[in-house]
Length: 380
Image: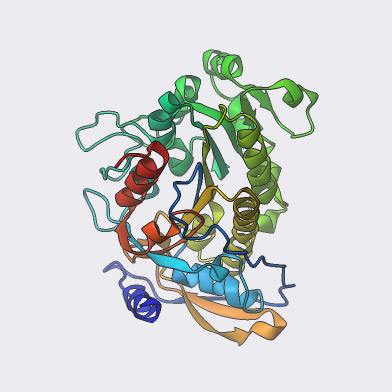
């Protein structure tokens, strides 16, 4: 079954927009392998409903991006150690090639919509997102991203706007959001918002630009907005923002759970997509490896906790990336991009923990959200 899914996925990876560009080649050399984690599988596939769900979205991450990271890392990734796998179709309500806003909204709400919509349906009416659905049940939620907080994917989990370009309105939606934690970019962008929006957000969240701020010791809701230099591309010196913020978010949400109620966390590796848009092969590989570090943090927690489901997928594939050659034992790899845009190819989905088996086969991105909601709300 897994072999047939893989073959189908490789075939579908070749489906590209009609206006595909000339192939663009790139390479990366001398990658120092990073460690990976082999799960215990003690809770994997159990039939007991999960208490917590961590949804991880690699923006623009198809088979090509994952495989590139795998081989560049010497043939190892934590995500590739998982056993429950499948594919997600990513079409929007208006196009078989989605954008991040429509797909992010599908992952966040369980409904497909038009390209450009953030938390709105096809008729431009607000749709409840997972944090909003879960809050009345006492389940707390958070968002982590290497994008700015008004980026299409993180915005889909708290905002409701008819157009993803309405940046100031998206930021303002944070004021009434049901998140208790967010970590994304950036301090500089936040400071450019209107006084009313900044004040409103600060009234709801303890907003800091570093995780060593003493104010965090007593904070009940946190907004972590570091300087741009700390959320930029890895090739520009970002550092470990994503895995560190992921771990911090997990610890904070676990600490602030309501009794036996759980938490929901969305983590986005946003710059895999941005590098693929630029046909930057080395940058794509580095961002994929960094995303895998965040995945490792989530899987380690799931093993320790025993009641956490981790779901890992992508909003769409970007670049039509295929591998060209290399020497994985040396950390050398080359690849080819067929486009600078999105492709309609299905993307992989991996799951680990209780009810991981519910996320195998071929699913729509909207169905992923509906299954998460069903598990956390314990609907039949």
